Length: 328
Image (tube, rainbow, N blue to C red; front, side, top):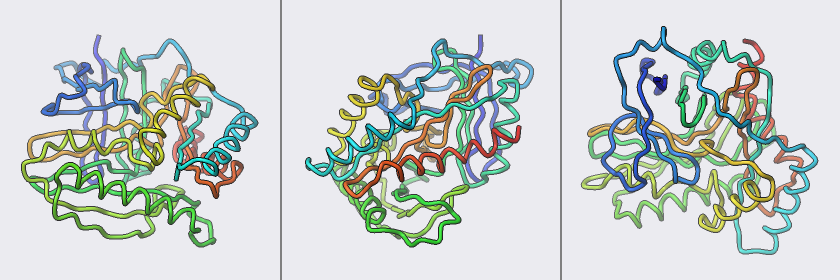
């Protein structure tokens, strides 16, 4: 039985293929093709296409277990605990995620993919239907790492507000942006990257949201692109700072205390090749079931956060997909 893959890199044509997602080693640095990883990087898959016809054979592979949704009350309770923790510990930032459920008819899966491609021309849009991982779809605005021959590119995307918001950026959002930018610069230098140039921060529109964004370009000569991507991931934009402690705390709060997993959300996803690699952070995504979609969203907490505002930010982020889901 085949797995199925459809994706559209910004400014490129849509690719739709049948094949198989196969697990690869976490240190397999020369994999070429479509690749995706979960958040914790302990599950990474490479797609091998076959000759089956995508359209006639397509089916939605369903996971056995539906993700756990927590109430707003629980989210706020833990959000306030996190803010208190940040005020008393040497943490700069922590990203707390949640899952939101909405109705969806899985017969409209391909229609959903095509509509996301139409609505979000600047996003990386993908659809994965895998026996191992179920069916996931997303439209992410964030590049993890791109390479074109010897030139590398990445971005810091941190700080979020509604496109209609008239309020200026706050110190909290500029701090978030600055921490991610510093992390990227330090990580690239630790990996032996030289000639790093940056531009920003500037306003970057993604669907119904505006983010603060800084672009980085650098020299990639003799460096392994996939290895650098794995070292960059997860950036503080999706985990927190300090990184190792934030990942441990995410697994403690989300997985152990609240009983849900990020799974593929905030993992990385995209295409690797000899001369060109385009990898993205898996944001604005959801997992599909027969009659429902489970959307994954998160908010970046600092000691200046309020839990209610972070809840509202996750609601805003869910609109990227919700606005399309509700019209199908």
